[in-house]
Length: 404
Ligand SMILES: *Cc1c(COP(=O)(O)O)cnc(C)c1O
Image (cartoon, rainbow, N blue to C red; front, top):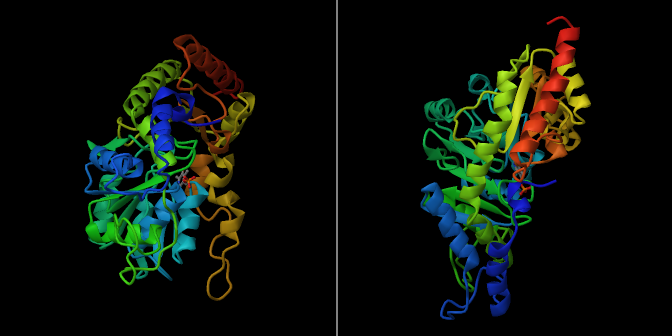
């Protein structure tokens, strides 16, 4: 049940991986003077930085690690508060806890991303970072978020794990805030099974993120450098096989994004034309989003639940570890006085919106995300028309029956 890149694995990945296997250089570090050393991870970093227009890119072992390294890069540690939406994959929140920070949950709006209006009220003297999450391929309202960040002297970490390839007002996401974190997990736009990336323009943030990802080392060392470690680090390194696979996927990224845009438009048009009473679409903050998913919002939560059920899927509010209400490991977190930090239904606006929302797959087919119904990156025009028809057939009669 993967993302679009996983549907399109082929000759490109094979070629890059075979090159690594023929040389035996499996670690990102190898002999610089050996022309056989392919430097796949370093090449992947270069491509990411170029695409994003950032000075630095750091490959890591996964999206969660990318967020952790980014947080450490920005100086988040014990007791520092990070603002993060209550609708996100659990990793955005657990990464903050894992580096000693305190996640403070914010509401979302009808874009299903961070609500800038709720943000300012949640800022305290302990807040240092805002973490917008570009959910379901849709960029967050970055203009508003950046304005609030600058006004309050806060740093911005963009969680781009679900939105590689999206742009906001002409800028690649991840390059708008101070640092950006990406995932190459199987459910994302492109994949290497697992993998991640950090991008930034700031040398200090990059050095700290790099150090955290590799035992405190300075960037791009090739060998030991005893006594020169800048900070305490762990191991989040990407290896050459992963880097090679990801390079194969990078070759298809533009084609994937174009295909998704085309298929989403074909899927959405009949739904718009059907003018289903009481149904709108999620707000898209920039048309240059990722187009991995199509999300509808109903007026009536009962109607949303009925439609989802008849389609064999669920409302976004039921999408497991993407909604704070279902994150039992987060709900169990206590503060220094032993008091629970979070509770179910503490974000009423988020609960209301998610209870009326249904996510339909376009390129990411993931029931865990609530997207168990829809199309894939391989769907034909005929299949797309049929999926749209099925949706309209299910979405309509209930409306008539309830008299709307
Ligand atoms: C997938 C995802 C992550 C974590 O990425 P992994 O590669 O699975 O560690 C973090 N945040 C969001 C929003 C995600 O969708």
